[in-house]
Length: 483
RNA sequence: GCGAUCAUAGUUCAGUGGUAGAACAUUGGUUUGUGGUACCAAGUAUCAGGGUCCGAUUCCCUGUGAUCGCCCCA
Image (cartoon, rainbow, N blue to C red):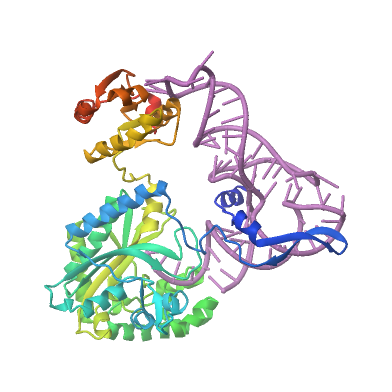
């Protein structure tokens, strides 16, 4: 195996099947198949259960939860700081909400939508992004009467039927910010700032912002015509896909990574040069605000984005400073026409989304700190029948008093319980044995010094509390620190 | 949706045409009431289905999944 294939194989996971189920369900017997007694599956009454979720779906294991918790905390704080209220919308919406808003011809809708018909006959789909649902709810609940801008924060799973790769799943999570009712470009700048601040607060310092303006429907139409006529004149030099795209979505050609296409698009007319007066001024002042913020950005005339509702400002947030691995952590833009399209009054709006899984991949890559919750500092060990019975009550007394206690009630020997206590790195272990249970006492063992003392159950809680306060400074042995 | 590579214990990896080993992790123990080291022991795996073969985990095909590239995006 080469290095590369090894690296790939490393990450590979096999499909597993519940064996017990298979045994009870599948009957095998020797069959004289072609005269050779091979085992053959004769009958399957039930499908065996595959120990894996469907493609592109992933479990979030306990060991990863500290990262998720960190993302939750940072994003909720950021939402508060920037004045966004939490808003949760359903995972499922009527399909045509997405068709109309995101656009029928887009990949997200055309190829990647998880759509199905309910038992009642409704055509619905799992949300492939949040904006459409939030905009729908904004209208449904008459939130247009609220003081503008109406800032809404959402987070949750998103579904796209796409081919999985690293950082790309069919079920993934987004952090989503939307602001309705403000057209001032200062809001664009603030949204971009909020997005980068959030990413950086997670410990991902090296980020770059790419921005572009794709204009409003009016100037975009003119620009599109210009672009198409340019591309048609050079069509012979484009790749196969892009020749097709001239008709369907000429803007996407600017994204093409084929050498010949990117060379052509470098010389192609750029949308920023063909904005109408309003869009041009909007973009110009946005850039001025960003300069004022000392927020580094790159104008990327080839940044297009795949959803139809975007107007004027579009942007993406990328990880990594120089070359090397870069990935889009999130993106967004203005969608001044969406609310009207859905049947509301014309309402300028802007939003962005960050991909949680991608943020976490990046956090791990740059060794950003995950969130670590409080660890128990007390372990409760029990020995003998009577003590075991009493220990349950004692545990709950400690818990009621706000003392975080670890235990291993299922274990019998004191030795194995102390081993667990040690591994958890607790400061003290409370030992309740047969003798103590009869006397109404408990042994308090200091896990650092090994010293022990006996205390009466009545005074135990106060004693433990006092000890936890005073023994704050504890020097562990080296072996203790890594737990 | 297209192309490529890969698939062995919980994890990281060995290995073989005659049903598999290690390390780490887990659990138990080293005179049954005292932890970190050491020692001993145990359990757990060839992704699924079919084919070739006396015999397949190993070779072939298909499926599934993962990874990478295209596409797209978060």
